[in-house]
Amino acid sequence: MKKIGVLGAGQLGRMLALSGYPLELDFHFYDTSGKPSVGLGDITIDTKADIENPALAAFLNDVDVVTYEFEHIPLELTQHIESQTDLFPPSRSIKVCQNRAEEKALFTKLGIPTPKYHIVNNAKELKAAVEDLGCPVVAKTTTEGYDGKGQFVIRSIEQCSEAWDSIGNSPKGKMTLIAEEFVDFKRELSVIAARSKNDDMVVYPLAENSHHEGILRYSIAPAPHLNKEISDQAVTYVKELMHELGHVGILTLELFETKNGLVANEMAPRVHNSGHWTIEGCASSQFENHLRAICGLPLGNTDAYSPTCMINIIAVKGDIESIMSLPYAHVHLYGKEERAGRKLGHITVKADTLEELNWRVQNIASFLPGSPDFEGSKNEKN
Ligand code: AMP
Image (cartoon, rainbow, N blue to C red; front, side, top):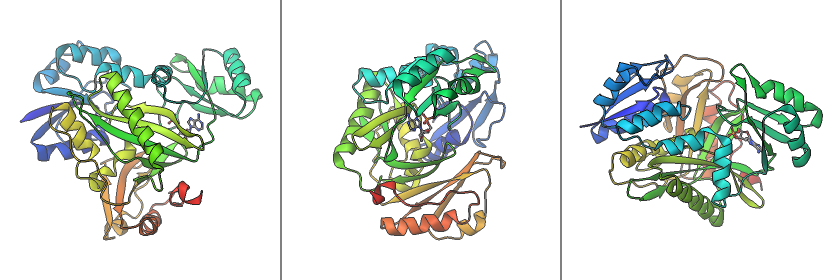
């Protein structure tokens, strides 16, 4: 039985383990947050992420391969692990995905369209960037941002110093920012793919993602009424990225669909919230394919069975028992306490048609207080 070491011990690690046990895989989690919620497998806690910690050596000794469920890990730690054992995806993937400037440079190198941008290190440079790009501008920290944190939408040039003070001067010191032109997108899409050590690749149908207050709320997959040319383009981009990085495991690429085609936003070297629908929606989920890839097993089928939607449960669990009594709702809870903005679980629903799917999702959302209205695919209205 192979033992998988996972850096991080939250819901993504939990779902990795849930998909790995049927494949005779065992799990050991290395938690640097001090608050593991995984609830499965062995757990080592090391809040300093200290490479000299004997607990790290014991963890590495206990596992056959190491992976991770989040990318904000000190590179020193991942490079140390890589020098001792197999780490997939490799440190190079983490390094690029940790930094929006490196990510955008890689997109540009591979000819993948991105929003026009400038990298800035102070308020004066930010103002010059905004003058060049024209308002609105999305300013983001190049590192450490997630779920809309570390972002500021600048709507007039006078807001530059406020934006700098708000995200450029962090308690940890001065940040480098990326100032991006505001993309007028039709909808947000993501493409999730897996690559094995011998360069086999599989790609899931694209998902259409809706956010509310910076947090993903709904993913519909396959993205409704998607033009084949656009979908082929996304597949080419994600394959080129995985190949270039020497990536092994799942890679997620987030994209904007505009009237002129796709524009890449960011990527993640891991299983992704917009791929949770694959647990019930496909023969092999993103979690299973990640494990297959890092264990050198054949990759599994990524076709979608039918129109599917994933609904995130954020902050409060709502009337979960009523949702559980619906014959079409697959409920996943992560073992976390309720808290503002926190991902507590998700629900997957499948249907034979998009109309039926929309109706079912609206019904489920009515039991989740604070859920934004679900209006179906943004593409249906165009
Ligand atoms: P990110 O952390 O880069 O994924 O950004 C969070 C959300 O902000 C995205 O899902 C978009 O809704 C929005 N956003 C980010 N960058 C841009 C941009 N350049 N133009 C328009 N909206 C953006």
